[in-house]
Structure formats: C-alpha cells, structure tokens
Amino acid sequence: MDDFESAINNAIAGQEIPGCALVSTNRDGSFEYSKAFGTTSMKEGNAKPLGLDTIMWVASCTKLMTSICAMKLVEQGLVSLDEPIYKHIPELEAFTVVKAIEDGTGKPIEEKHTVPMTLRHLLTHSSGLSYDTTHPKLTAWLAYHKRQPNSSGKLLERFDAPLVAEPGESWAYGPSIDYAGLLVERISGESLEEYMKTNLWEPLGIKDMTFYLSKRPDLKHRLADMSSRNEEGKVRHTDGRMVYQDGDGNEVADCMGGQGSFTSAQEYLKVLQAVLTADENEKILKKKTVEEFFKPQLGEGSRVMLNAVLQDDMANNAMGGTPKHVEKDWGLGGILVMGDLDDGKKSGTMIWGGLPNLIWWVDRKSGLCGLYAGQVLPPGDAKCASLTRQFEEGMYKAAQKVSSSRL
Image (tube, rainbow, N blue to C red):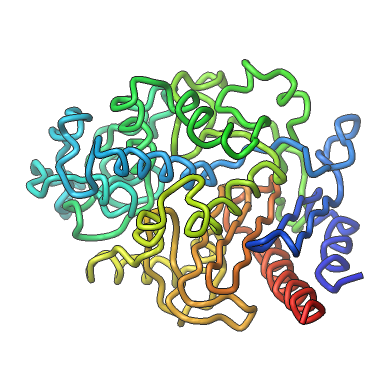
C-alpha cells in the first residue's frame, strides 16, 4: 500500500477524517487512479461506505466550471474580457468602495468606484468584491450598520456589500465568480445550470451534477454528511446551516456560480481532464482560449496582495497548500504556481478547491490532474491539507512509474 493510503487509513481510524475520494489521471488516460476511503458520515446510523460516486457539496470547485462557461461566451464574441460589464449587470455600476474605516467612530468612508469593472476582474478576483464575512473592511462595515452577514438565497441580495478596492487595484476572495455566473445567465438567457448542462456537462458525459438537490433526489440520497473538527482534533457530524442554504436553511433560489454545485469526485475529474486536454482537442475551449486561461493575469498590486494572503496558514491550506516562498499568480480559473514544486508540480500548474477541504490541480506541463474530495470543516484544515499534499505527491510518483514502464 502506498504511504499516502496508509496515512489516510490511519486518519480514518483515528477519527481525524470520516473519509475521502481521490481521483487523478493524465492527458491520454494511460494513468488513472481512483479510490474512495472511509464512510459518508460520522453520525451513527447514517454512515455508508464512501464511494467514488458519493455526492458532495463541492463549493468553490464550481468556480472553475463557471469560468469556463464565461470564456465560451468570450469565444462567441458575446462579451469581451475587458469591456465594462454594466451592460449586462447594471446593478454593479452603483457599488461603492470602502476607502477606509474612520478611527474612533468605525464609520466606513465610501465612494463610488471609478474604474470600470470587467469580466477579467471578476474571473481573477481583482474586482474589489469580497465576502462580507472574510474581509476586515466589510466586517467593520457590517458592524457599523448593525447588519448580520447576508444569507439570502438570491444572489443580488446576498452579495450586496461594497467593494473593498477599486477594480484591478488589489485581490480579494469573494463573490466575483458568482457574478460571472450571473453574466452567463444574462447573456445566454438560461439559468447557469441549464447553460452548464448543455455546454459543459453533457459534452463531457457528466450526469451526476446539479445546483438543486431538490430536483435530483437520486443525488441527494447519495449526499455525504458534513463533519467538523472539534477541539480534540476529532471530526464529528454537523448539521449546521451550510452557505448553499439561505438563512432559513432552505435551498437557495439562484444558481451560485462560485459555490453552489453538487457532484461526485469521479464526475468532477471529467472537468479537470477536459481542461488538461483542451489545448489538444478543443472539446470545451479553443486552444487560444486555453492559453489565455493559464496565463498570469494579475497586476502588481493584486499579485502582491494574493501572495500576502497566502502567508496565513489556513488561507494557504485552503488555496492549495503550496510552499509560501513560491510566487503565485492567478489565471482565469484558479491560482497559478509560478515555479516548480518539490512534489512534482510544474510552474504554471493551476490549483483551486472548495470550502469543505476539496483541492484540485491541473498541471499541463506534466500532463497530470487530480482531486482530493472530502466534506470536513473548517476550510483550510491542517490535517486535510497534509493528506492532500501526500496524495498529490503520490500521484506524481505513480504517474512517473507508468510513464517509465512504457519506455
């Protein structure tokens, strides 16, 4: 048994994770790894063996698919990366930007933003939009206005907080890709789910994916439970409200392109391999688009901020857990590592994940992609991050053995 499999089994035995699903493949499919470990729940009576077809809330793994859909519209000439997006989302034009928080009073100093927001800003998280629960300017803004974080099931209501910087000036993780999803809906005239189904899921043979579990009871029946880590380091079942629900615990009304989809590890791998091979077969995007997708996109201020954010352990774990000294940038679908890594990843590898400690990567130079999929809170969990790193390193070693055996 590989070392990383032993580590995962030991973590399950020690109640450090309930289980996980691991998948990886290369460009031509000559290397494939797919294996599930553990159970779907830490709640007695709920637990079933976790499988490759177990449905999970993949959270921000949704962002990659939304970004692909937005770029399909760019390919069709229906929108450009650098035109103001207010023609399609006029609501964003009126957003103010919090310039500062007044000393003593805590009053936010707000002004109307002056730099036009573009699709490129949205896809790179340099739009100035941020989650109201994660940015100090917005937590101060909420406190001053005696507001709670917005949990509306409607996108325009949930993500109504002001900008934290002028578009293109900085980097902040937030609902930018949710708004990119709204852009897809406004231009296509379809819901994001309908557009993805026609233009991404069906062409890739994906059947087990949805934004609305209420419409897919077969998937809901296979949904893994969520677990959270307690002070003793053990994971326990949690049925707390998830952000894919509204404030009343109900299913959200809108397709949230930044966080709202449910699928299995084996289905999501089809998306990753499609991204890996699109420069050859142009199945989901044209070669020219793929090159832009993987090109570093950030200006100096945004790049400096991204790398500063990644100095925090939890944030770094949640964003791929790569060595902090290696510079990062952002493509149009995820973070880019700008140097070779010791585990085998090559410079230009794209990485992102989802809140319950899922992490994916696409390495075009090595021709390898994969996903660690679990359902554990909090995000950026150190134990899950360690297991993910061991799995990824194991995939590079295993893929290299297959490659060497074919010589």
